[in-house]
Image (cartoon, rainbow, N blue to C red; front, side):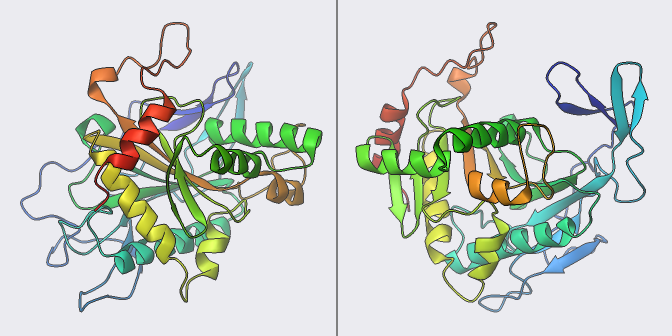
Length: 330
Protein backbone atom coordinates (compact mmCIF):
# COMPACT_ATOMS: atom_id res chain seq x y z
CA UNK A 1 0.00 0.00 0.00
CA UNK A 2 1.19 3.51 -0.76
CA UNK A 3 -0.10 7.08 -0.62
CA UNK A 4 -0.49 9.03 -3.87
CA UNK A 5 -1.30 12.73 -4.22
CA UNK A 6 -3.82 14.01 -6.73
CA UNK A 7 -2.07 17.00 -8.36
CA UNK A 8 -5.41 18.67 -9.12
CA UNK A 9 -7.28 18.42 -5.80
CA UNK A 10 -4.10 17.98 -3.69
CA UNK A 11 -5.80 15.15 -1.80
CA UNK A 12 -3.95 11.99 -0.79
CA UNK A 13 -5.35 8.54 -1.56
CA UNK A 14 -4.13 5.21 -0.26
CA UNK A 15 -3.96 2.51 -2.91
CA UNK A 16 -2.31 -0.77 -3.80
CA UNK A 17 -2.96 -4.40 -4.66
CA UNK A 18 -1.97 -5.58 -1.17
CA UNK A 19 -4.92 -4.06 0.70
CA UNK A 20 -5.41 -5.65 4.13
CA UNK A 21 -8.58 -7.66 4.68
CA UNK A 22 -10.67 -7.66 7.80
CA UNK A 23 -11.07 -10.88 9.79
CA UNK A 24 -14.10 -12.94 8.83
CA UNK A 25 -17.16 -13.35 11.01
CA UNK A 26 -16.09 -14.35 14.52
CA UNK A 27 -17.96 -16.63 16.92
CA UNK A 28 -16.65 -14.64 19.88
CA UNK A 29 -16.22 -10.88 19.60
CA UNK A 30 -12.52 -10.06 19.77
CA UNK A 31 -13.19 -6.88 21.76
CA UNK A 32 -15.36 -8.34 24.50
CA UNK A 33 -13.59 -8.85 27.86
CA UNK A 34 -13.92 -12.64 27.76
CA UNK A 35 -12.36 -12.96 24.29
CA UNK A 36 -9.18 -15.02 24.01
CA UNK A 37 -8.14 -13.34 20.78
CA UNK A 38 -4.70 -11.75 21.16
CA UNK A 39 -4.92 -7.96 21.03
CA UNK A 40 -2.21 -5.33 20.91
CA UNK A 41 -3.61 -3.16 23.70
CA UNK A 42 -2.14 0.33 23.70
CA UNK A 43 -4.11 1.95 26.51
CA UNK A 44 -7.03 1.20 28.82
CA UNK A 45 -9.23 3.47 30.87
CA UNK A 46 -10.16 2.57 34.46
CA UNK A 47 -13.39 0.64 34.97
CA UNK A 48 -16.69 2.16 36.00
CA UNK A 49 -19.40 0.23 37.84
CA UNK A 50 -17.14 -2.77 38.34
CA UNK A 51 -16.35 -3.57 34.73
CA UNK A 52 -12.88 -4.77 33.66
CA UNK A 53 -12.20 -1.46 31.87
CA UNK A 54 -14.32 1.35 30.49
CA UNK A 55 -12.62 1.97 27.13
CA UNK A 56 -9.41 0.84 25.47
CA UNK A 57 -7.25 1.47 22.42
CA UNK A 58 -5.88 -1.46 20.41
CA UNK A 59 -3.99 -1.78 17.15
CA UNK A 60 -6.36 -2.31 14.23
CA UNK A 61 -6.25 -5.99 13.15
CA UNK A 62 -5.89 -4.98 9.49
CA UNK A 63 -4.25 -1.55 9.57
CA UNK A 64 -4.09 0.67 6.51
CA UNK A 65 -1.09 2.48 8.00
CA UNK A 66 2.05 1.03 9.54
CA UNK A 67 3.95 2.78 12.31
CA UNK A 68 7.40 1.57 11.28
CA UNK A 69 9.80 3.54 9.11
CA UNK A 70 9.80 6.87 7.32
CA UNK A 71 7.37 8.13 4.65
CA UNK A 72 10.11 8.27 1.99
CA UNK A 73 8.39 10.92 -0.11
CA UNK A 74 9.18 10.47 -3.79
CA UNK A 75 8.50 12.25 -7.04
CA UNK A 76 7.35 10.40 -10.15
CA UNK A 77 7.33 13.07 -12.83
CA UNK A 78 4.59 15.51 -11.80
CA UNK A 79 3.22 13.03 -9.26
CA UNK A 80 4.03 12.58 -5.56
CA UNK A 81 3.84 9.42 -3.52
CA UNK A 82 5.02 8.05 -0.19
CA UNK A 83 4.80 5.00 2.03
CA UNK A 84 1.63 4.57 4.10
CA UNK A 85 3.38 5.34 7.38
CA UNK A 86 1.10 6.15 10.28
CA UNK A 87 -0.95 4.59 13.04
CA UNK A 88 -4.32 2.85 12.79
CA UNK A 89 -6.12 2.02 16.02
CA UNK A 90 -9.50 0.80 17.18
CA UNK A 91 -10.95 2.79 20.08
CA UNK A 92 -13.19 0.32 21.89
CA UNK A 93 -15.84 2.57 23.38
CA UNK A 94 -17.18 0.22 26.02
CA UNK A 95 -16.48 -3.21 27.51
CA UNK A 96 -20.20 -4.01 27.15
CA UNK A 97 -21.00 -5.34 23.66
CA UNK A 98 -24.43 -3.67 23.60
CA UNK A 99 -23.57 -0.19 24.87
CA UNK A 100 -23.12 2.18 21.97
CA UNK A 101 -22.48 5.89 22.50
CA UNK A 102 -26.21 6.61 22.42
CA UNK A 103 -27.17 4.12 25.15
CA UNK A 104 -24.03 4.09 27.29
CA UNK A 105 -23.77 5.75 30.67
CA UNK A 106 -22.55 9.32 30.59
CA UNK A 107 -19.50 8.47 32.67
CA UNK A 108 -18.58 5.76 30.13
CA UNK A 109 -18.79 8.28 27.28
CA UNK A 110 -16.56 10.61 29.28
CA UNK A 111 -13.97 7.84 29.56
CA UNK A 112 -14.11 7.24 25.80
CA UNK A 113 -13.58 10.96 25.08
CA UNK A 114 -10.62 11.03 27.45
CA UNK A 115 -9.12 7.95 25.80
CA UNK A 116 -9.47 9.51 22.35
CA UNK A 117 -7.77 12.70 23.52
CA UNK A 118 -4.97 10.81 25.28
CA UNK A 119 -4.23 8.69 22.23
CA UNK A 120 -4.19 11.76 19.99
CA UNK A 121 -1.73 13.57 22.26
CA UNK A 122 0.50 10.50 22.50
CA UNK A 123 0.67 10.10 18.70
CA UNK A 124 1.25 13.82 18.17
CA UNK A 125 4.52 13.46 20.04
CA UNK A 126 5.73 11.64 16.94
CA UNK A 127 6.83 14.44 14.64
CA UNK A 128 6.31 12.26 11.57
CA UNK A 129 2.57 12.68 12.00
CA UNK A 130 0.85 15.86 10.84
CA UNK A 131 -2.71 14.90 11.77
CA UNK A 132 -4.75 12.56 13.95
CA UNK A 133 -8.27 11.67 12.74
CA UNK A 134 -10.85 10.17 15.11
CA UNK A 135 -13.99 8.83 13.49
CA UNK A 136 -16.88 6.40 13.83
CA UNK A 137 -18.60 4.63 10.93
CA UNK A 138 -21.88 3.08 12.04
CA UNK A 139 -24.11 0.89 9.90
CA UNK A 140 -23.58 -1.31 6.88
CA UNK A 141 -23.91 1.60 4.46
CA UNK A 142 -21.28 3.52 6.44
CA UNK A 143 -18.74 0.71 6.17
CA UNK A 144 -18.81 -0.34 9.81
CA UNK A 145 -15.93 -2.72 10.54
CA UNK A 146 -16.84 -4.30 13.89
CA UNK A 147 -20.03 -5.20 15.74
CA UNK A 148 -18.57 -4.16 19.10
CA UNK A 149 -19.07 -0.46 19.97
CA UNK A 150 -15.96 1.20 18.57
CA UNK A 151 -14.48 4.16 16.78
CA UNK A 152 -11.18 4.38 14.93
CA UNK A 153 -8.12 6.59 15.01
CA UNK A 154 -5.55 7.16 12.28
CA UNK A 155 -2.40 9.25 12.53
CA UNK A 156 -1.14 10.39 9.13
CA UNK A 157 1.82 12.22 7.64
CA UNK A 158 -0.60 14.56 5.81
CA UNK A 159 -3.63 16.69 6.69
CA UNK A 160 -6.96 15.40 5.24
CA UNK A 161 -8.32 17.54 2.42
CA UNK A 162 -11.56 18.50 4.18
CA UNK A 163 -9.64 19.77 7.22
CA UNK A 164 -7.16 21.58 4.97
CA UNK A 165 -10.07 23.38 3.27
CA UNK A 166 -11.39 24.41 6.68
CA UNK A 167 -7.97 25.65 7.80
CA UNK A 168 -7.55 27.76 4.67
CA UNK A 169 -11.05 29.24 4.88
CA UNK A 170 -10.60 29.99 8.59
CA UNK A 171 -7.28 31.68 7.85
CA UNK A 172 -8.73 33.85 5.08
CA UNK A 173 -11.66 34.88 7.32
CA UNK A 174 -9.31 35.73 10.19
CA UNK A 175 -7.11 37.86 7.92
CA UNK A 176 -10.16 39.88 6.81
CA UNK A 177 -11.95 40.20 10.13
CA UNK A 178 -9.48 39.27 12.88
CA UNK A 179 -12.06 36.82 14.24
CA UNK A 180 -12.65 33.06 14.27
CA UNK A 181 -15.23 32.13 11.63
CA UNK A 182 -16.53 29.28 13.79
CA UNK A 183 -17.10 31.61 16.75
CA UNK A 184 -18.99 33.99 14.46
CA UNK A 185 -21.10 31.11 13.13
CA UNK A 186 -21.97 30.10 16.68
CA UNK A 187 -22.93 33.66 17.61
CA UNK A 188 -25.27 33.97 14.62
CA UNK A 189 -26.78 30.50 15.08
CA UNK A 190 -27.55 31.21 18.72
CA UNK A 191 -29.04 34.58 17.81
CA UNK A 192 -31.26 33.18 15.03
CA UNK A 193 -31.99 29.88 16.85
CA UNK A 194 -33.57 28.25 13.78
CA UNK A 195 -30.88 25.61 13.16
CA UNK A 196 -30.07 24.80 16.79
CA UNK A 197 -30.81 21.27 17.95
CA UNK A 198 -29.77 21.41 21.61
CA UNK A 199 -27.46 23.24 24.00
CA UNK A 200 -25.70 21.69 26.98
CA UNK A 201 -23.43 23.94 29.01
CA UNK A 202 -20.72 25.26 26.67
CA UNK A 203 -21.57 22.82 23.86
CA UNK A 204 -24.09 23.29 21.07
CA UNK A 205 -25.56 20.85 18.53
CA UNK A 206 -26.72 22.49 15.32
CA UNK A 207 -27.49 21.78 11.68
CA UNK A 208 -25.02 23.74 9.51
CA UNK A 209 -26.31 26.50 7.22
CA UNK A 210 -25.11 24.67 4.06
CA UNK A 211 -25.35 20.94 4.80
CA UNK A 212 -24.01 18.16 2.59
CA UNK A 213 -26.81 15.71 3.47
CA UNK A 214 -30.15 15.88 5.27
CA UNK A 215 -29.83 16.09 9.06
CA UNK A 216 -26.08 16.76 9.05
CA UNK A 217 -25.28 17.90 12.59
CA UNK A 218 -22.28 19.54 14.23
CA UNK A 219 -21.37 19.67 17.89
CA UNK A 220 -19.22 22.68 18.68
CA UNK A 221 -18.01 24.38 21.85
CA UNK A 222 -18.73 28.00 22.76
CA UNK A 223 -15.23 28.16 24.22
CA UNK A 224 -12.70 28.79 21.47
CA UNK A 225 -9.96 26.19 21.08
CA UNK A 226 -8.40 24.85 17.91
CA UNK A 227 -7.60 21.51 19.52
CA UNK A 228 -10.00 18.79 20.63
CA UNK A 229 -7.36 17.33 22.93
CA UNK A 230 -6.58 20.36 25.11
CA UNK A 231 -10.06 21.11 26.50
CA UNK A 232 -10.91 17.43 26.87
CA UNK A 233 -7.80 16.65 28.92
CA UNK A 234 -8.12 19.87 30.93
CA UNK A 235 -11.50 18.58 32.12
CA UNK A 236 -10.19 15.13 33.05
CA UNK A 237 -11.10 15.71 36.69
CA UNK A 238 -14.64 16.68 35.79
CA UNK A 239 -16.46 18.96 33.39
CA UNK A 240 -16.89 16.58 30.47
CA UNK A 241 -20.41 15.61 31.40
CA UNK A 242 -22.15 18.24 29.25
CA UNK A 243 -20.32 17.10 26.12
CA UNK A 244 -20.93 13.42 26.91
CA UNK A 245 -24.65 14.01 27.46
CA UNK A 246 -25.01 16.13 24.32
CA UNK A 247 -23.17 13.56 22.19
CA UNK A 248 -25.38 10.75 23.49
CA UNK A 249 -28.61 12.68 23.00
CA UNK A 250 -27.62 13.93 19.55
CA UNK A 251 -26.79 10.43 18.32
CA UNK A 252 -30.14 9.21 19.63
CA UNK A 253 -31.82 11.90 17.56
CA UNK A 254 -29.75 11.03 14.48
CA UNK A 255 -30.74 7.38 14.81
CA UNK A 256 -34.40 8.37 14.63
CA UNK A 257 -33.85 9.52 11.03
CA UNK A 258 -31.05 7.22 9.86
CA UNK A 259 -29.75 3.69 10.38
CA UNK A 260 -26.17 4.73 9.74
CA UNK A 261 -23.84 7.69 10.03
CA UNK A 262 -20.27 8.91 9.87
CA UNK A 263 -18.95 10.86 12.84
CA UNK A 264 -15.61 12.70 12.68
CA UNK A 265 -13.78 14.88 15.19
CA UNK A 266 -12.11 17.82 13.45
CA UNK A 267 -9.10 19.17 15.32
CA UNK A 268 -6.03 21.28 14.57
CA UNK A 269 -3.05 19.70 12.80
CA UNK A 270 0.02 18.63 14.68
CA UNK A 271 2.31 21.08 12.89
CA UNK A 272 1.80 24.37 11.05
CA UNK A 273 0.93 23.83 7.42
CA UNK A 274 3.22 26.07 5.35
CA UNK A 275 0.99 26.37 2.31
CA UNK A 276 1.17 30.12 1.82
CA UNK A 277 -2.38 30.40 3.15
CA UNK A 278 -1.73 29.18 6.67
CA UNK A 279 0.83 30.73 8.93
CA UNK A 280 2.30 29.87 12.29
CA UNK A 281 1.08 27.52 14.97
CA UNK A 282 -0.16 30.55 16.88
CA UNK A 283 -2.37 31.69 14.01
CA UNK A 284 -3.87 28.21 13.66
CA UNK A 285 -4.75 28.31 17.36
CA UNK A 286 -6.46 31.68 16.86
CA UNK A 287 -8.20 30.83 13.60
CA UNK A 288 -9.40 27.23 13.87
CA UNK A 289 -12.06 25.74 16.16
CA UNK A 290 -12.45 22.03 16.92
CA UNK A 291 -15.84 20.42 16.38
CA UNK A 292 -17.60 17.10 15.77
CA UNK A 293 -19.35 16.47 12.45
CA UNK A 294 -22.09 13.83 12.19
CA UNK A 295 -23.16 12.94 8.66
CA UNK A 296 -26.20 10.61 8.55
CA UNK A 297 -26.68 8.15 5.72
CA UNK A 298 -30.27 8.63 4.61
CA UNK A 299 -30.72 5.74 2.18
CA UNK A 300 -33.71 7.25 0.39
CA UNK A 301 -31.60 10.31 -0.40
CA UNK A 302 -28.32 8.67 -1.34
CA UNK A 303 -28.05 10.80 -4.48
CA UNK A 304 -26.88 13.81 -2.53
CA UNK A 305 -23.89 14.55 -4.76
CA UNK A 306 -24.80 15.50 -8.32
CA UNK A 307 -22.86 15.13 -11.55
CA UNK A 308 -22.10 18.85 -11.29
CA UNK A 309 -20.37 18.18 -7.97
CA UNK A 310 -22.73 20.40 -6.04
CA UNK A 311 -24.23 18.97 -2.88
CA UNK A 312 -27.99 18.58 -3.18
CA UNK A 313 -29.90 18.26 0.07
CA UNK A 314 -33.68 17.85 -0.31
CA UNK A 315 -34.30 18.70 3.37
CA UNK A 316 -33.35 22.20 4.52
CA UNK A 317 -31.21 22.55 7.66
CA UNK A 318 -34.04 24.51 9.30
CA UNK A 319 -36.43 21.60 8.76
CA UNK A 320 -33.75 19.09 9.79
CA UNK A 321 -33.12 20.95 13.05
CA UNK A 322 -36.83 21.15 13.82
CA UNK A 323 -37.28 17.41 13.24
CA UNK A 324 -34.23 16.55 15.31
CA UNK A 325 -35.38 18.80 18.17
CA UNK A 326 -38.66 16.90 18.28
CA UNK A 327 -37.00 13.47 17.97
CA UNK A 328 -36.46 11.31 21.08
CA UNK A 329 -33.12 12.03 22.73
CA UNK A 330 -33.27 9.42 25.48
